[in-house]
Image (cartoon, rainbow, N blue to C red):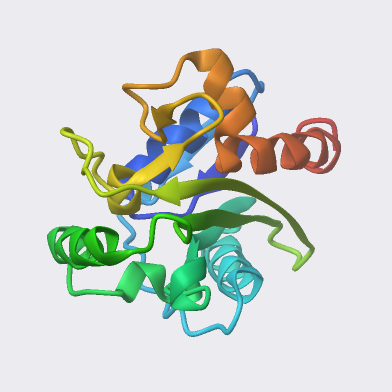
Length: 201
């Protein structure tokens, strides 16, 4: 069975991507499986730059097809911030939540729109790169969801008005995840490329 590496140190992302790719006839490896750490500096100006940089780095390092992603949340009232700096908006996830809690309390009720964006990249050891992207729109609410998801601090305040639920795995059904999970939607576009470039190559 052919192999593919998921290049992330984020447990939440790894869990999501493993779940979304499990229907493919391919062995999925993590950085931990290879005793590697995610030490690529994410200094790109766009999600795509960071995603491609990580995927290419580990594809060349391991000689394995590699999937990496980068994304963030863009809050209208903050001029689209934190955006590409979402991961580094504060020193850790607890600090991010505390910062977001203060912002959520003070946002105007008619200016709470926010967007999650993600770019997923598949890089091959020969240097070929394929990237897809998707997004999900929602609002920032005042009340934090009671249970946090490790790796996804922003979801504690991100609400989907269309279905009146938090963007949280404990809230959403599998069918709703397929409709509203921005990472799921982006990975579906990569799957056909995986089949063509890896599984059936």
